[in-house]
Amino acid sequence: MQDYARYDIKDFLADEAFCRWVLHQKPADNAFWENWVRNNPDRAGIVTAAKELISEIHHAQDYLSEEELQLELQRLSAARKSATEELEYTKPSANWFDLNRFGRFSLAFGVFTCLIVLVYFYTNSPVKTELPQVSQESLKDKQDEQWIEVTNNQTNTKYIALPDGSSVRLSPKSKLSYPASFVKKEREVLLNGEAFFDVTKNPESPFKVFTSDVVTTVLGTSFTVKAFDQDKDVRVVVKTGKVTVSANARQNKTAEAEKNELVLLPNQQVVYHRDDQKMKRSLIENPSQVGPADIASQSLVFENAPVARVFESLEKRYEVQIIYDADLMAGCQLTAELGQEPLFEKLGMICKAIQARYELIDGQIVIHGSSCK
Figure 1 (cartoon, rainbow, N blue to C red):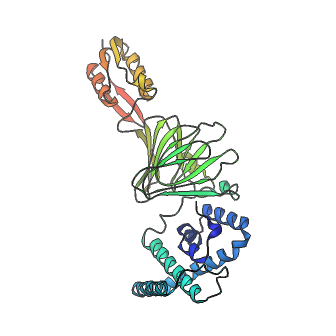
Figure 2: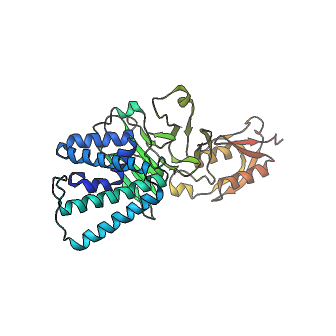
Figure 3: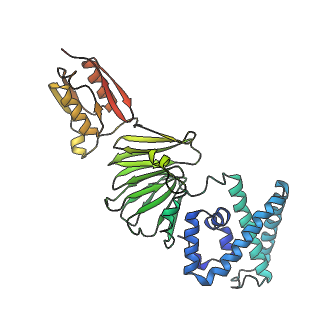
């Protein structure tokens, strides 16, 4: 985390999180910065000055053409280079209004850096780079929390240990924000991008992952959330346990938002379509066996076994729900050895043997068949 207590004007101007707060005033950013200023009153003057300068630069862009903006950037870059060549480094004055020779260079460098940041914001999806919102009611309890923001700019997955013992594997080009410590009976984080969560179980403190579109709620489980801004869909995939996914109400929850909620079990996923703001539940493409590896590696062997027992065994192995007409198929039996074939290949073999077919509906497996007499 940045040591903002050591920042001067140009440091704040060059800080992406600070510029985002000034320009967009998102609730989560407001909560962090307002709390930080309260805890660091001696830096309030510098923060105010930096905010005013960023605002002035932002308003100035309304009167500059693209060509004029590029010329100004080139001029500031040249000034910075010239000042660097003729000046040795000295510590900036604590009073930034003391515009001595180095002070003028330092301020120009800050303006130059801030302009670059502003150009980046307004040419690279200015709205979509914002952190997702949580409800206003929830934010009332977060004013005194200190938030940590982690961005993965690497090509490999980044491991993050959360305060409650939960872990996160943050994918490249993704960002996670979370409190320095979870307070009261809630554990809430903000995600922009993709991450795999392995959540420590705590029935008294639900764990919630907020994105700009959906809220994923668990008590203790493992799952993946994929919510990149450029994607048309948001996807939540469950590995273990039970997960609830609901639409993210930007203000207080409405009755309509509460209806747009689905419960997911292992090997299930939900896809939230941003265009029509609807969610669809389904099984993942290749369901995996759930449970200890030594048990999952064992083959399922059946000899003249009722098909009901076969379906029951598959339900336990994959924690999926298989729906069929038990009375109609009471006479169906199966002799087979089911090993490490994919689940859907197993189902295909079973259905061929009993002259049936299967269909995937709303995250469940539905068997259509007839009597085996």
